[in-house]
Length: 450
Image (spheres, rainbow, N blue to C red):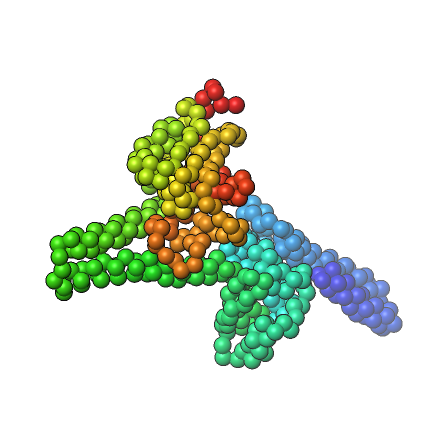
């Protein structure tokens, strides 16, 4: 720009000089022409100097504004006059703009990293409803809902019937800038939230609340199940006590009713104990004490404690577990695994049953066990996948005629998971009995294990 200014100034000065010279040639003498030429050259030199002075200062400003990185060492120095002061103020403004750009870039990077790591699906839309930015979780949720690809810069159609309220909100959002709704799609539940900004751009947040909804439903079911499980023994105890208090009955009947009430209190105690154990596994697993335990000794303790009950039903137990297998875990939980499996056989498999507990291998630091019986078993296979659910019973009616809290196998599964293993169940040979196959994390393996 300065060069063009210099050119115009020189051209105008030359034009004036030529006109003056022509006039002088016609009207004046040669000495005056020489004097005019000297004045012209001096003026031209002054113009070139002033133009170069301005041009160099502006050039330094231009180069400084184009620099990607601003450093105190590269800030240009200007003359100590009014023009130099103006240039210095301009350079300081440029420096501040550059610093603000860098700071905004850093903040933008932090924001994008935060959005990418967010547990919510986030997408920003321009005012024309084209996509500006989205994170991976939004893309995943969007594909579940729409079953179509998402591309930056592409306008999204909100024609789907479950998005019609969104379209209506976008078309009519005058006084409101927030909207929320729920979407159910392909077995998933989503919470959709929208925030509209001043320039009519907006953000859409998709939160997969399927697990939350399942937890809520599970809690409702658990509350109902617990209430049902408590109602039966409490009602029985209350009934027996009312009979004892309001009726004049013989000592033999009193003893019978007291015994039956006592049996119901045992059921209540068992239920509370099992629920407490499950709560510890679920919520306070880290607080449970762990140690190295000889698993064969734990199994032996189980069958010492249940020997009388097993003899009453003529249940025989065969244990095939090496004596040098050490499991890293909690004694009570390991005990509960084999105790609950054994009690499950005593309650449901019938009399004259054989139980076989065997460790059939070690791999990747885990010991693999099979707990099998040849009792009544389960005829319908579809029950097998639900045996580990809390309060689940194979037979309808939810009767307690066979005893148990309905939590035993759920405790077994959670205890196995606590010890780094997995568990599954299948019907036994010739559809007799059940076979539970599970693994437990070893602390060390003896020389006899291969």
